Image 1 (cartoon, rainbow, N blue to C red):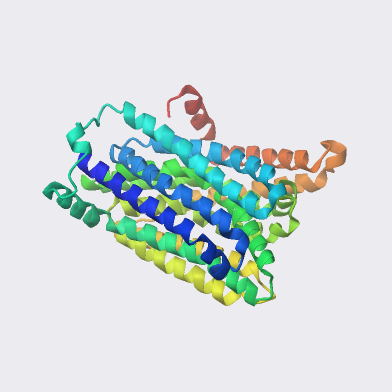
Image 2: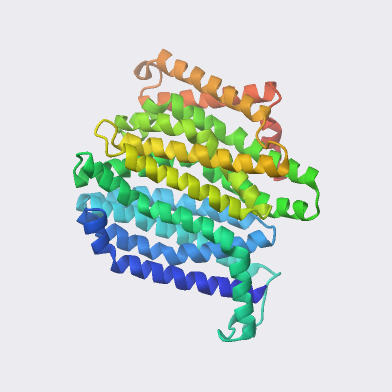
Length: 441
């Protein structure tokens, strides 16, 4: 185990460092020829700094996952968000007077700081972990030894499906901005306008809709070791119970966000970002949000059951659909960046449907059932009521501002949703909150 861990850490650090250095070296030609925007040179170079750090953090998360202790990865993810989000706002505000390129580099630097904070927490937990203290001879194996070669073959054999999934997702993510930029330029947008539109979509609208997945991350990751153990014991009942619980918890806490983003798209775009043109993007993305939110538990279940190759295949199909949709819709002057939003929606829906179909075929039951449907209907009803309240009371008269009015409407909708879920017996929010306050879960 010790050799495997240090071998994986060394390989990840090596590839991450090489990738970061390569990105820094190729930043200028990429910015000028691939993105047709020389202002991206500095952000690309800053992005290369985070690659090695992110790799080591991933190895440490996997280590704790292997010990069936998902608390450190969950806390590390929370630490990363808490550091990155305010740092991004602060650095962007401080560097914006020096140009949009400097501001973008500041946001990427905030990502780097968040990863460092997350890695620092994981490293401290690792040092304090009494279950894993290999001797120095194990920590510095000879790269030419027979043991290392055997360990490398084992890592490649066992990890290639997950590795392939990540390669597909990362490759599609890397190609996407190049295709979007070229498509928007073909549709008549200028280089600066294309960069601004894509930045608003991915950095504001997509970030906001994707943000609730932070809360479901720990649920998805904690499912892997527990479900893998149940599956190894051939306990199908326990396997099904764990998957259903993870999906239900995820749906209960994230479906309200999807409803809020759909019904409150205009006030959220205006109050949070002062960019009303983001409202249609939020509404479109909200259509895929319920699928996106349950995608985590379904993908984790495939990994736990040893079906990562299915995950990789589904990811490839959904990524190709997204890229093809971008090429087909984004160059059209009447659609432009909205075509990219449609591509995001189609990818999120298709990937979740493929994951669900694979699990139904192999486990012979549906992890998404009637309860999740009723939770979504309750979220829709609550959000619609909140929108009605938002329009009924003028902000200047009642609360003194649009921001306060929006906060009041969202809070009222959330309380109504929790009340409906309790009364209909869909989810025990009060009991869950009581256990959290007592430290029992």
